[in-house]
Image (cartoon, rainbow, N blue to C red; front, side, top):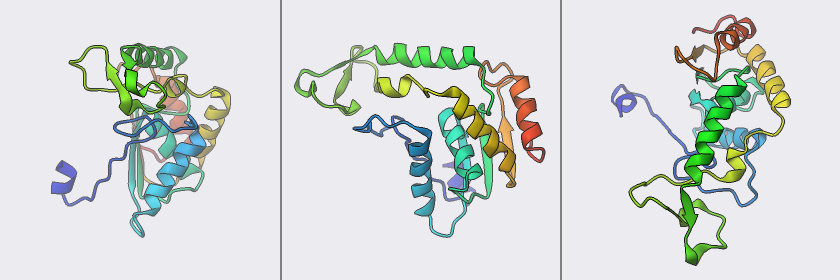
Length: 188
């Protein structure tokens, strides 16, 4: 709302298994699939070059989309994500998502449906839906993921801002320093 009031046209989309989006029938949460989704949305804007803002998975997707030439953006803002992430922090987040998802159970009349919309919380006071177990499992090849993110960071020429929480256990000061070496013009 604040962006709109400031004269910006803002689009917030639900990536696969985020917000109100459903679980893909093929359980494809690959970086390629997510980058292609972002590319499709960006191309629907026509000649408008977006400013991409992303945290976690959406930040990595945005970094790849720009670095690999799928999206021509005006600027990139990465929130608590860099090519080098800390395994303990990532494991903590994945564990939290798995615990959250275990609080849901399938409805009897939708036991064969793959979509999250047919699940109900065990705690009826909760309105959030579970994460697809395929998504929660996370990327299978973290080495390849890191290589792609590093290569993309090296190719950035657009205005770039990296934001990191002071006490983040996902992106360390070492991860920030590495990113700044790859993308020396970035602001922190």
